[in-house]
Length: 384
Image 1 (cartoon, rainbow, N blue to C red):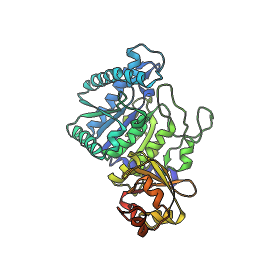
Image 2 (tube, rainbow, N blue to C red):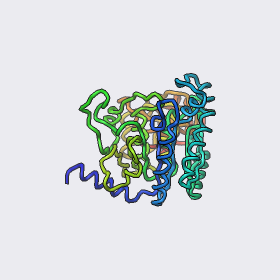
Image 3 (tube, helix red, strand yellow):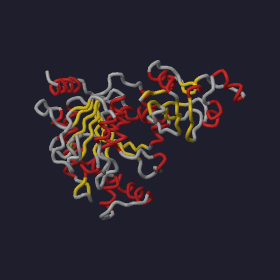
Image 4 (cartoon, rainbow, N blue to C red):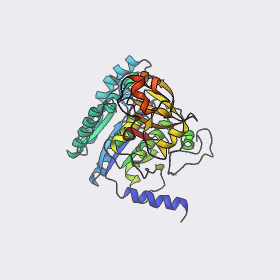
């Protein structure tokens, strides 16, 4: 059996067990002439999601479009540039966006609910769990949650950056089986297809390596905030949590229902999940939190963390960078300058500057106290 057929069989087997799906749709798929919501596209989306629900699937929709809808309300012809302008227009547009969704889904007897999130909601463990409980409760009520970033209140520090990242986090949050990213392109290509007519669509990705990330074009569309790279990063986060991802062209007619048709098996790029999935807490540590510093470690420490599954000790730390406190997330960097792990630290930056390179038995003498032998316990560490 050739590689393509083998991958196809593997994908079909995965799709047979799908129960819960996160669907992310970008502004480019909702825009009409880049200046208004395309109500026909939204109605078609509602019809397809309704069909999938009739098959017993649970759906969470991640939708951009608040600023687009706000621009339409105010008759603007260009995207606002300042944060206050964007937040004000998002406040106007979010109401219009949800009103349009409610009207479209009502035609198929579907009830929708609005969830607005910031990065703070994901970084705080208690709020993270509360968000998960709300979403799963809505699904039990047979409601379609429509999730968007809370653009009206976010600052640079608490912003996700784009809904691609948000979709990967939500998929992990609710233990989804599949993340579908609806884009304005057909999938991941070997090269930028707008620059090279001979670029080849990549139908399957087993492992999202640095080479795969380098294929992603960082350019953005007029309405969107993310490019191809943010979509691949979202797929990588989902894969780490044991979730498959499917990147497809959202403008293709009946795209969602066609994905689950036995006659349409070659569309888009399918990213397989990793076999050794992270538990919910480790996925939260590795991909939901934002690092506040970094620790450069020697080769011996790197080997013990990766190969021996040990905790990080002070003796293996070469350099400390950033401004972080106890319990914050830091990046672990090898001497080849590549990040290989992330974890929650048991000491703050000032303390680590004193005890780096020293044995655990010396910590109390150097600081006058000792919290733990481990700088990062293996239970609080995620190998990337």
